[in-house]
Image 1: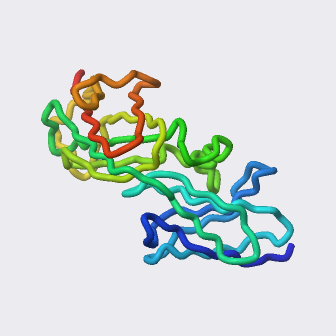
Image 2 (image 1 turned 30 degrees about the vertical axis):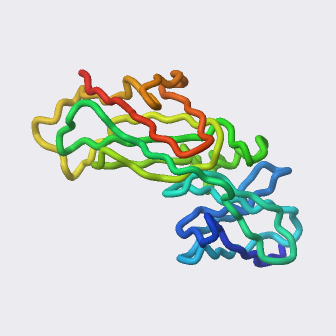
Length: 213
């Protein structure tokens, strides 16, 4: 089978977006044929089959979250994340021991500027590994700043154990969960063991965490 090379750039707010996973997707087959990561200036290049109509997809996982896609043609393919809004995630609640970290997860349920049919590529397997949540951030900080595309988002935080920081007295039955999520003091709706929020401008989301056995 003959191959061709396709190339382009991932862009966010006018600049190149580095470290973004770029897929060459066959929409008809529902499969990812090749993948790579954008370079320091957002540029990327892939070798793909020469006999397929392909879609280039950028899965932007942070610090800018979202999805960009464009058909592959004869020239360079620009994958522009488009509009994004600043989001602050603030974590409140129980103090955690040194061997535990909150793992914040974010996933779009709807994106205002992205066609619904394209959302499937967020979790599409690459080399037999599922894409998982669009955002997964393990942190010691109590405040996270990121940018995300407008739409409806799902968010939660759970316990992540850091193996090399474990202590002998680590309880085997400790669980960390998000017990409340709010915006401006207003509770967010519960959904799928997490919470949903609408993003149409700069926003601060407060996650209240609690540990339990």
